[in-house]
Length: 298
Figure 1 (cartoon, rainbow, N blue to C red):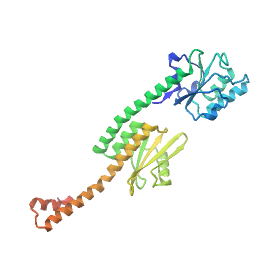
Figure 2: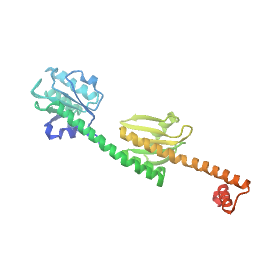
Figure 3: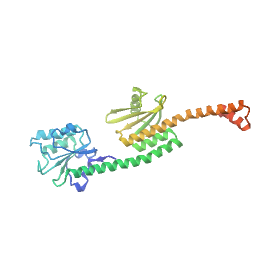
Figure 4: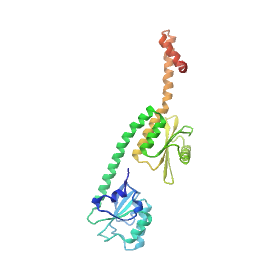
């Protein structure tokens, strides 16, 4: 579970006060950055909480609004404004702009160091990642047991539950084999098939449409494709990608089983036939030979 702006504002020890942008409280946070640059947006990649005292901001409302909007445009999760240095209070123009775009804007009291906010966020993010890893270590054995006892469809169900996304399994001809939750959305199925058709030999592909991520992973060996695993939903983090990789490996092994069985059967037939030709076949070996030659009639 990601760390949100709502979680940060709720930390009483930090004494943060939300002034605007309540619509964006569920925005996920992945880091905290402090900057006094008016062009700070140029150095952001999205998901940050930007902390500033506004030392380089002027009293020009238009400039203040441009500053807020520029941060929102690059995906900054929230803006923390330290009062008592450059400004005694957050400028009204910034509050209005933040409300307009839904960017959470909160006040940081003078006696609260920015490092305290950063440390709280980093600790929470680390705890969240640790919890996801623990969850993944529990999901992997469940997927393995599902593969052994119930087959590919059960693996798809366990993966969908673990990563909380829609999962589709297609065969080598792009026909649907399993979906969780079922039945699959026709549009999702069509997009996954289109993604596969772009490059069937590729190990995987990703496509984003309308804020929904479509990811496809090829299931197979170096020389043969057994099928494709599609995941539909929010972008996957590193833990979820690890689970998708585990499921893909399990499915590849599951699909390869018939080949291994046929190979072992051929070896058995060869050995028993060799014994027959050597004249050392007894009643038991004869039954094995007949069974290997025609399992359905045995």
